[in-house]
Image (cartoon, rainbow, N blue to C red):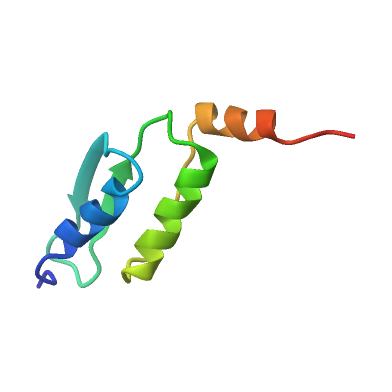
Length: 82
């Protein structure tokens, strides 16, 4: 059984920092439901970390994340080399 209002709390937390490009729920009949969220490529690494912290704060757990090449390239551009 779904915890009432869980998706609302999740989307509200994410929307504090960015928009949601897509959201898919999986395993509706399972004890643990998976939720796939796609965020925009324009999201800064700083805001990405804030989103992750907010999701954790409200009780959701991120068990897998996949970053696009765009975000990885932004992170490389922000690191300094010596």
